[in-house]
Length: 254
Image 1 (cartoon, rainbow, N blue to C red):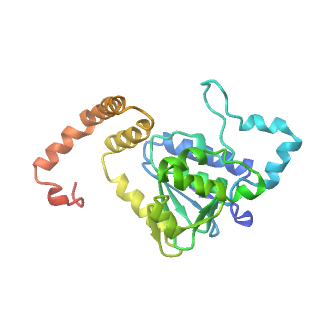
Image 2: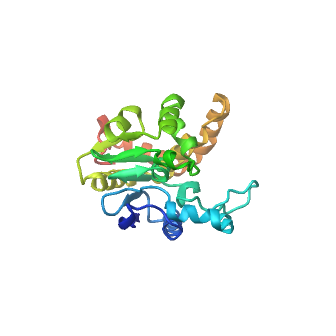
Image 3: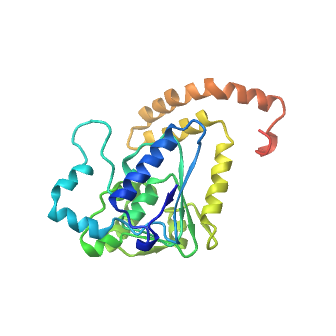
């Protein structure tokens, strides 16, 4: 998936947000698509919410209806200011981060399952200096990914978080040379797409579902979520292993 507003360092306006939501919804429905890679054109992942548009909301609050989070369980939920940040997909998304992923752009990267950063890429709650809060899941996802203390320091100070630090604290999973984030992320996507998909998606789903649950309830959900995938794919996979494939950790022939 390409986010393309290079003239604004890929800051998100309503048109771009709507386009990304539509693209990801189509991806999730597509039976031929297994893994998505999200990247920003022109050397920037996303500089956050377009503050010129954000300022216009004060003058015309009717626009808030497009992004207001409902108090009930109605569906579909209106999109987030940064687009897909409220979507709960059934397939993985990898962020290929070049340049800034700051403010809402940081939140967009946190929405993805895995983050690959180039050496000069960086995160940061840069909206701190403008009095714009995190409203696209940043205060929810960042503590779950890096822990409360680290998340709180990053959120409160609004400072720059360079790629090497992001890797060290677990805010990203890989740091790669300049210009290689998309290539690396796409190679990872192809590797994930090789595996039996029902099982992979069941494990991904379970990892998210268990958050905040007591151990016994989380284990119960894991079982009832995973067993149908075993019926669909696991038994056949066990037969392939018994026939000699994939021994000694060899993933090349599965």
